[in-house]
Length: 257
Ligand code: SAM
Image 1 (cartoon, protein in one colour):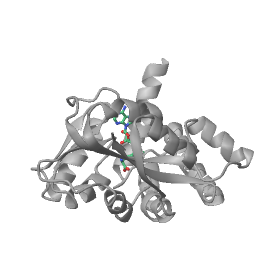
Image 2 (image 1 turned 90 degrees about the horizontal axis):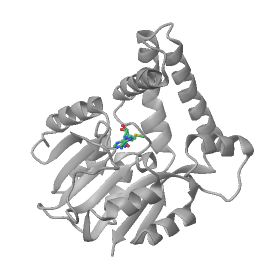
Image 3 (image 1 turned 45 degrees about the vertical axis):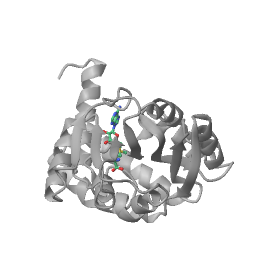
Image 4 (image 1 turned 30 degrees about the vertical axis):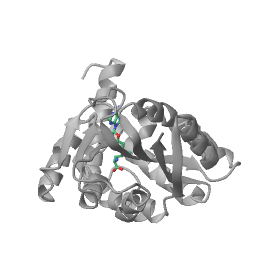
């Protein structure tokens, strides 16, 4: 491997992708929460067009598909995730309505006002909440919905340790009222917002990682980059347990006007 920055970056991305491929979900969430978010959206018909952006391997997409009759396209930057996504759709016998495609959320392969619903769990941060909401709106029909989950502060103030962690990880994190205002300013009616319960992190996200971490470390024994990556994952989990009253994921549902 050459030592220019781009190949180190590619190598790390490969490791990250391999690690998250071992998991059913790549971010906090749960079937209950996906269904709850969907309950705020007007009933969709068979012809409805839905996009799940940053879908990963499709944990939440399959739940969505089981509770809506429409056509769903899952979009993710990583081909490995999309391969697993399409296998997952087949396993659930949803391949006629649910298709995974490789692409980027900042260059969507949809037509103007084509979509009835844009879904995105734990992924809009990749282009930023405000930018994502503004750009994606062009692809929604008037009256269409956006439903995204996003890291948010629950309080106005917090200890320096957790402030510093998030300023490094995602400086776009903000309080719930500020996120709701951003949604409104982006041209949506903020229909609902609710905090994901902590089982979305503990049961559905961190618990499955215990085994994944063992498998991954065995596979990459002696690899410093892999060990460093797992140490970071564990640190992130430790911080969650320590500060979970102060931040978490929030679902924001908006209707295009
Ligand atoms: N929605 C999934 C879930 O909740 O399990 C995955 C969430 S994971 C935290 C974020 C996802 O965004 C990853 O699957 C990642 O590959 C994807 N991603 C990152 N940048 C992207 C981009 N520019 N366009 C599309 N997907 C992207």
